Length: 75
Image 1 (spheres, rainbow, N blue to C red):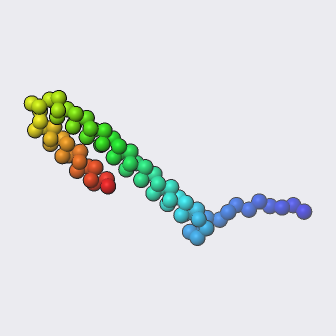
Image 2 (cartoon, rainbow, N blue to C red):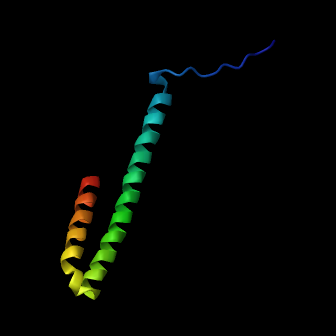
Image 3 (cartoon, rainbow, N blue to C red):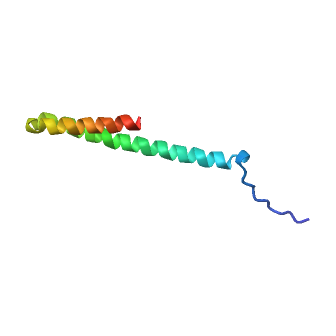
């Protein structure tokens, strides 16, 4: 007797669609976390520059405010 291999059918109820959605969601979450890490590093750099370059304090404060707004948007 010969047996045939059956390919799984892709229907919304069998988990394939849910798995794809889960992976997309996880990818989006990881991307947001990566962006937040980059912004936090920028924030730390600006904070250190405010101490070492007091003449640029106003510009650095504006940059810091912008970075913090971007972090808040990702949260």
